[in-house]
Image 1 (tube, rainbow, N blue to C red):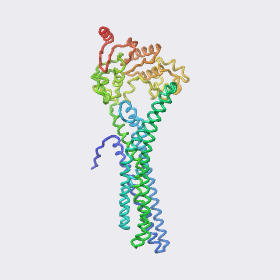
Image 2: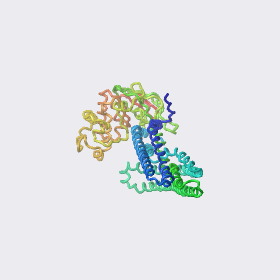
Image 3: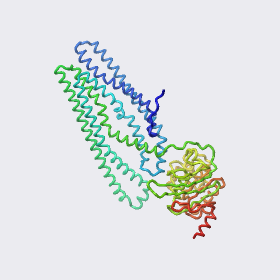
Image 4: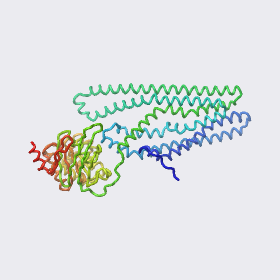
Length: 562
């Protein structure tokens, strides 16, 4: 019967468990290495106690050849386990990189205390620890009792001395953990806060430079940097104390073991060969513990990285499994949708229900802060998980994988971000470029002639085009991206916020184009010009649905209320 897998708490633990065979093989090679570490001890005993007494050259030659062979086997085992760990680290990265990549983006959709920007650094830290010296200490530590047992065979006093030093070094590692763990955690948090503060401000460099805000920003950054340096220095000081004490114990152990062996030789308890062998063996016996102490700070930081990765994967579970195989009609139904921010009693959206039909334009109106953008994200199945249901063609929009659903939906958020690549690649959503579909989307957004005036037309790198694009032009490229592929459902959040009269006219033409294609368009806006293309109007206020229905009926009801 196959042994049952243990109950795995999380996805990251399951991935590490799937690599158990690789780690088991590393354990076998570690067993060979540690057994063959006894070779120098045995060789010394043979040379001092057999060869020196017998004066036999042949015995020395045979013993030396056997020793060299065993050293070769040990070197091969060292190389093999290092190579296997490196390949295991690569395999771990391949198993997690896609999940971490997607999880990093998905984590930004939900307010939390996680640090998604650190995700790949955390994955690298975990991989490097599993392929570095620190993990060898964990594989070698179980062999410490074997070495101590051999010392007991040489003489009980040597075994007792090794046990004493093993306990002392173990206590150093244990107390060092309590001494440095909290200090290291606080220092890492302060350093991350400092780096995050600076990187977030670099995105607004034009505002900072133009209005002379750098000096004030520097003072704020300097205060955070000084605090981080002080905390880091405190953590390093505590770690330095741990390292210094560990070195003192190690040097004391080397000297005392040699002195104890010499005393035993003087009283006739052991031979000179056993004295030298015992000194080497005791050093080897305590080496894994010493390595544990020296790599302890790295272990602590890797443990924090592991916890952050685990939290990230928990916040962005794979979830969707069904693949959308046919083009959806595009009917969107919201049933009692409620969205709450963590820690806030009042919901951002409170029991919103309405239906948006294919081939129509539904305009969502409402003052700032009424929950319109939150509604747009809920309709796209992103952001905070809502209470109630958001249905696309009668099924929850979150049922399908985003990769299969994405080509059939278009989304234009308020903040337009264009990515590295050409204009055509940005419109094609950074996928394979279908030239006809790109041009059709650009023409629908009224961009075709403007793009042809770029230095390389559709092949212009966005790094060049982005430097001279206005906010309205960037918004229209974002609109073309949303229209790419003639999606069945299009959600536009304030698409005319940065548009001039020409841009707004192009937007209205795009709405007519989408309606002619049978798309379901939900347009969020505070400008009345878009009402001319509206079939239905939804009015939000303080997160609640105030009115919903055909355009003329809703507008008439609002006039009567006034």
